[in-house]
Length: 71
Image 1: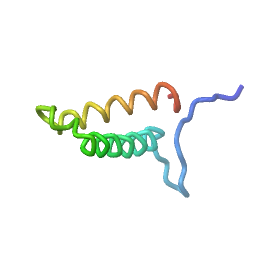
Image 2: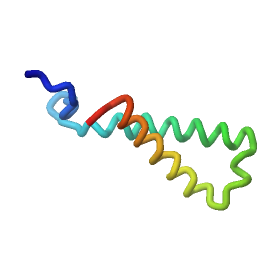
Image 3: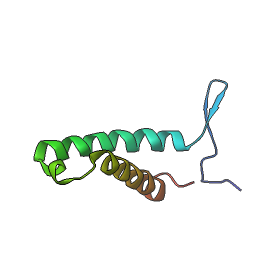
């Protein structure tokens, strides 16, 4: 029986957690989203932009984990 869920990623002799690509993808997607918000001017309406960045990062982590890479 084959398991469709990823266990760990192997680079040479180093085993990495499968959440690592999710973190990289979500971070880069968040940076792009925040850059678009800054370009459009939406970010001036936020009280604490740092917290909005973290909230968007968490949302991307949850969406990528839920829909693309299932653990």
